[in-house]
Amino acid sequence: MVSTLNHVYTLEKYISKNSVSLNPMISKGIDKIIRIEIKRLQNIRQRLDIDLSAYETKHKTSTLEIYELFRQGNAGDEIEIMDWVSTYDMLQNVERNILLLQSGNE
Image (cartoon, rainbow, N blue to C red; front, side, top):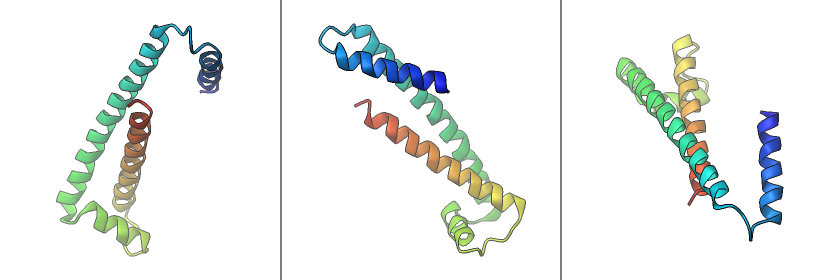
């Protein structure tokens, strides 16, 4: 991960100093990387949505209801409830990351 960040910082410096004569393939490559990552995150989001739907069907309640009960300390301490809430947290994180990538790629 550190190596990847170092590459990104180096590329940022390079682009800022050479924006006039920048090879268009660099921009196209970056756009492609972002699209691939968005697609990967969308696939994860789809799987998390399926998992949440299964919890909702089994417990006959919505994820938002159980999440609010959990935040209030009233959802119980069953492992399955913890997994459900964790799955919802993961979904929220994935959605934030999709939005972040999309906002920089418009």
